[in-house]
Length: 263
Length: 196
Image (cartoon, rainbow over all chains, first blue to last red):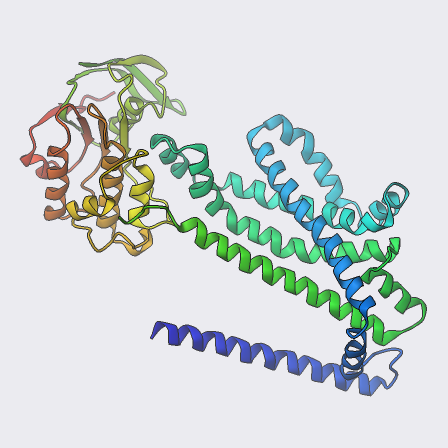
């Protein structure tokens, strides 16, 4: 009965999602027909036709894989560094005092300023990674720092009373407590990482990149290409967000299993 | 003997224990009785070493393994009842968690998560965690803060039976407003009624 209800709920969600997407596509198609100029507003049908042509070209996949690699490397690096920073800054007050202003400055500075500055120092191929890293880092740090502060003190005291080892505390107390904060950081971080990474590629124009393809679409007024590449970026960002959510759910389940329990 | 001498403890300027002294036996069951606000929980926390007194000393507990069953259950919400107990067991513990659960009348609840248990069931799991932690310790110390809260007479009786079955060198110090369940135990009573 429970499985049936769950399946029913998932089915309803999928149908609703398809219905909403169809309505938006229809509105877009109507608007494009009303404008009547593909140079100003490309219709979804034109975009899909163009996308069907693009995916047949090896250069499309080279750009997709290269940009994915660069941007996701930056996001993953930010997740790792942000997590370590949050842990260290929660533990050592002087590190908090030292790093907090820097992270706040990064958060407040326009990404374009960093990218233009970085163009002097960094090869264009690494710009996407750098931009994604820089934009996602403060986000991860802020989320996890807040999460560490919110770990239940009474459970920490329990862990102390029952002499939980560091590993046990990390696995059964900190990680489950921090997972929602980490998931939130991943969810927003991946989206922001893609935006920043693509912006950096548009400015840095590295070989085989979505950013360069977008730039060329703009220069040559290839509006269908511009819409296609934008759609590809949105889809990739969503794909990685869903993948991260799936992996985090799997980790949560794995964490819940205690070897030998229930004997 | 365990000597508690001239303990003083204040929180935010409010004195909870003032030159409190007490002698406890090395083993057996000791019940600390007294109205709320007399510092019973504070005394347990000082005995456990989770907190340090402002002044005074506790002697005779060094090297003894201590399990603290807190007034709140403090169970990890993301693991099952059995897993909560298993996590407190010392490495190489032999006693199956299922046996412990059966002793407390929780045979069928091991795979449930804390939020799927009643208040009384959670209380028993918290108690079992303390018992599991002391496995293998001949002269362990079991500190129980209101262990009978939310328990019916049958469940309280099961808890008392498990306290009775602890190794003879074990010292159990408990704070409880409910004294009726203790009838079946040979317990020493210490009053903390004196205002501080």
